[in-house]
Length: 491
Image (cartoon, rainbow, N blue to C red; front, side, top):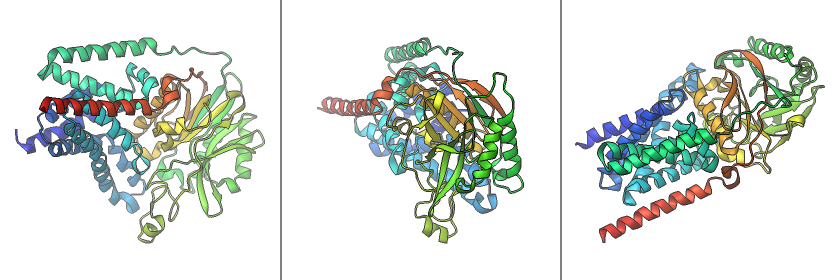
């Protein structure tokens, strides 16, 4: 088979594998496509060709999985629309470099399943850290909506990556290789699937559980900061906040990210109006605040008088979105971040922290992009009782971005054994239980509110206690073992 044909097939395999990501959920197709890619990889003898194969496959994968990335640039098409195709192509190729690294290292280590698994786990780890990280659309994310999600409580997203690749390699061997070993791998994966469903904690309603109200105004991004529309969305949120619930007033009302257009420094009357509408319930909401020359994307909790009782500043900002590297220089050239102010954009807060939410216990606040990173959940000084994420997914469009963001939120809950309250401007707003199940939601693209009892937390999971390091170490050992085995075979 010619190199050109192999590369075409690799790109097709990568693209097909992306269809296991939300919202498509075709995870069996992902395993088959990755299995075919493993077969192509096995036919390559040099690490350079293997790396090229990985680059093309990874680029094809991310062109599909990250296709939503064009949406933010189309909010203001006159100013930013020209960047959309470049953003998709260059981001996809950049992420594809990590697949190139994985297959290149795997081939240099001697090839084989152990080398591929170890190299992919380490490459995905690097992708989550390098240049602040972007661990979106990992290989294992195709399994989030399956009962295999349970095993993330042992080793996080890397465990799901291993399981997906085990299924892929086993499927290839059943079709073209060692059928006995392949069948054994598929049986093991099926057993883990069944076991995950059996071991998944059963959600139990607690009549004493605090009730949280989700507020979803459904403000389209191109209208969100329109002076004529801002009062419309604000009044809508006030009405939802004041609406009578069937069981009395909720214990907490949550508005989404940047739900209030007024800066916190000048928001006294605005917060008083919100408190009046809440009728005694505390309100968590997102807005911006200024401190000297710095501006922050913040979350605050206000009491029945509209006074701020807790606050948090987003610390993990979106590069080229909320801040611009070399922002002052690029600003003079007319290049600005999508959601940023002039120049450098938002400033980063000090890091993860807990906030006291009274009857709801200690909450861990996350703002939008922060929920993509497991380390932002594990980074607080103590274990929270629940996670509270506010976000504005209107930037991500209506096709795949919001659903992939929700899927990653579900993974964070499953990893840590913690419930999550997730409130999004345009959706999907949801309450997620400690096993990563969505127990109630407000669909994408709808305005509304819901009162939902907060599920309880599980005991700390193994992953909550150990983090990623044990699996990273095992991945490195797998690579080392593959290399040593290859050396003995040559000898």
